[in-house]
Image (cartoon, rainbow, N blue to C red; front, side, top):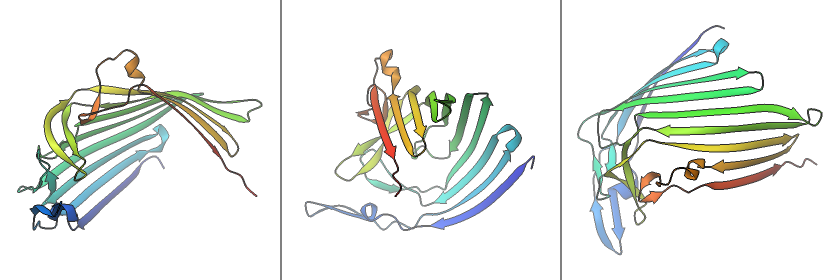
Length: 227
């Protein structure tokens, strides 16, 4: 078909996690709350055009009694109704062995107490071909993830929670190169993560006070043996 349309509506209600309601540390009560159960709905619609490999999705989330942790890592409940509007799009382009996959997420939130980036981009460019009499499937490529500036969370190991901060995370693309190899049930990969550190000296943070790894190399092997 030329055009596929899908839509959905979901309602949910859940019990707040136990540590948000009651928490003891060394037999001392840090907090004792009687939070109302969050209640929400998600309205979604998607459009797919197979002929050009394009997918577009719209989400509208409305939630009451949302629970979050403030800058002191204390659980709070929003007094206002939280709304999140999201627009997602993905597209795949192929020119012979060359592939370019792109995705974008735009989102708008009604409350600053829920800190998320308004823009997330993911791009992947790779060449896919076969070697050795077309027995070895090979991918050589790079992927890039970009987040727009937003106020970061901070982590509290004692309670295992993430609290709000006023520390802004600046724009920063995370660039990774990779090689994927496959022969029947045998797979191997090589990843060169956060190549940016070769020319970017400033540390990058996803969580305040916890910098991302510098340049990192990883490899892995998967071999399925069938009897």
